[in-house]
Image (cartoon, rainbow, N blue to C red; front, side):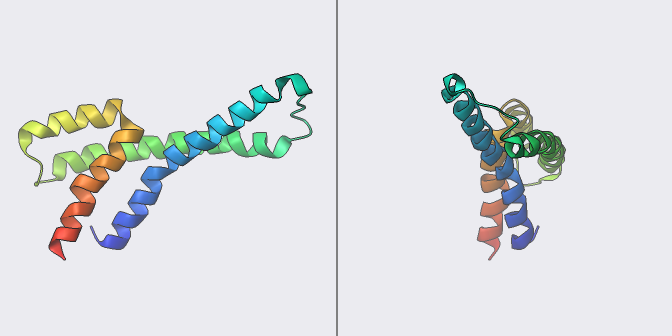
Length: 114
């Protein structure tokens, strides 16, 4: 993989984390203004943006899961006994494990080649 591809992959991998921050910010804002008669009809923009973004993030996570699982199997630099460990970690800790895997097994080997 070339550096530009790795950087694009990193941005896509970080999107679920950024969305999670946005989502919880919206939830906290909603609960904090619960007593202030928050009317979501007057703020339709955030709701109309949040739900499609939520669906898009789920699709991105599914695609990333497929990509990283295939990458673990095809990556010759990972020892065979550690491949199963990486698969379990990526499957159960995906939004945290995927950036770590990206850095350790995609970015660092690119830096070492140059």
